Image 1 (cartoon, rainbow, N blue to C red):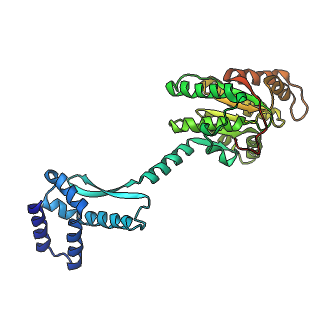
Image 2 (cartoon, rainbow, N blue to C red):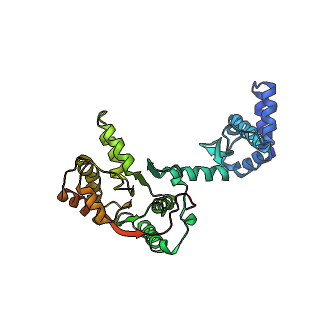
Image 3 (cartoon, rainbow, N blue to C red):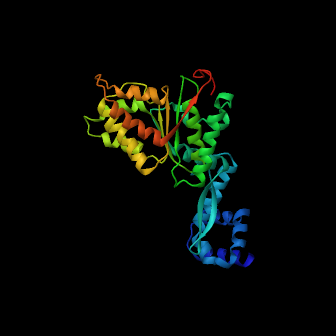
Length: 309
């Protein structure tokens, strides 16, 4: 590298560089990492191309030294790295291990879209779930679904209609499933249906109903949480829930449900509208879609709503 160094210094001397700048660049050129990079890429670089890249080399050294001195650089959490870019030297920034993990966690979290769900639902993992005797069958089916879906995400995989008493962990177990799938790169959505129903009704006046429904209808994997928790109008049952389920049945999109009602109890609940109308045929039509999309499973156990899941 001595001849290359001499050539660079000669060119700097011949050019009208400011004295201080020449000093800083010359100092940067002596940096150990810079010297190693120049040696490794000697065949791809000329003295002229290195000189034209002096500002980038100086930036690399300055940013590297800031990090070594525990100071924030131009991009906190990222380390500078020299690269060859069209026969000259450029500086790029790569994330630290901590920053990379942070970015991966954020990307994973963004793969689980939540609508009116508990804030911590995106944090729960299957490893945190207490595998009680009552939960064994459910966890077995959840793990089986994950395995089957990863192996063939294009095929139809029925979800679960998970019903049971308040606070037994239905929502959190399905949330953990969604987070596990997110770790493998798959997107899903979770929606608290009573809250969603309220928002959809409010959206009528602003003509944004389709904007509310479409993300739920098209989600690759969907968890409809707490279905049957409140009474529905005929419009919500048929033109909102019915439309969502019809699309998911036609497109064979995996769909999960949580409810305090069994399937028979939910059908009875859906039979009567908010106005007291008795519409068993329309309720049965909804239930046929539910049964196509999901297999029923009851979850028993203690009420853990105020306990660790």
